[in-house]
Image (cartoon, rainbow, N blue to C red; front, side, top):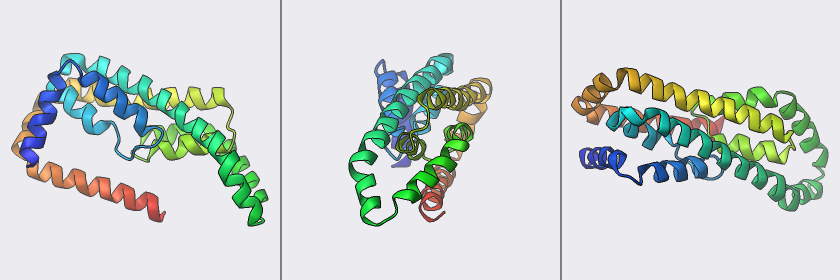
Length: 192
């Protein structure tokens, strides 16, 4: 099953619509979807290294636009839903304190989340909910996502052939490690 999924993903990378699928996943991941675009980006670059820079650019632009959607979700859903709940619980001041602390480190928070496997949507929604200045959010999101996706593209463009051989030789182990990292990330976010 894993081999079939791998072969399907690799063939998708050569498909003319692969770029659109990557754009959709990167956009949705930055606002609501739990799966990072790397799941599609990495096999696409390995299968078609000559298009690595295009794939990185598509992932970056789509992720930042999706981040703006997440920001809007936080900005508008919090006002309509979250704030009344906090007021009813007598915790309206708690959000103000949290917002101040979050926005003091806002650039670094967005940058860190954008570079790491931490779910970017959490930060995009919180950025809107805490009214982080939009230019600061956009600038840090562009910097973080471009650095992440172009670094992946550079590494795979440079070392892609040996990586592909390794993955194809040890696909079962690679899949097991990937699943463990993904589950560890979800558990870390949930319990930390």
